[in-house]
Length: 139
Image 1 (cartoon, rainbow, N blue to C red):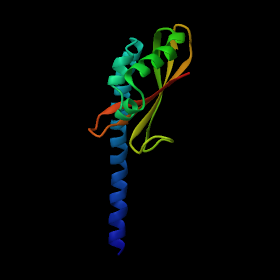
Image 2: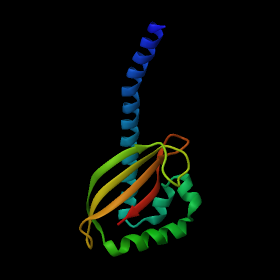
Image 3: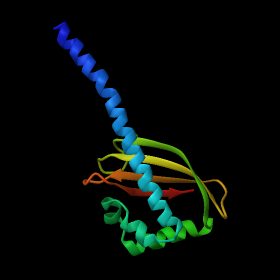
């Protein structure tokens, strides 16, 4: 009995670093996807951001409606001048979102008209394993 307990504890201890490594890889992939998506947003290409968004995002808003919303949201800020990653956190769920794997990412962004904006980008893992943006907020 003690040997089984010891083996279980050892297996659990070995699994923890593996889970952290998998989450670190997921976070890196999600940040890369967010950076590519933000480059499209910075270029003013709302249609391309919709094309690169998560399927749940696309199901929630039409491409023309999203393009218009993004333009209206970003226009008062002017062009993005710089962006610094503040945080990226792996989440197994988010309030009000369908079950899945998410990474909550925040950037401090300098825009022409707003010096210290915070952009929040939320990529999620799609069924095919890719990371796609499922949410975007700027304030």
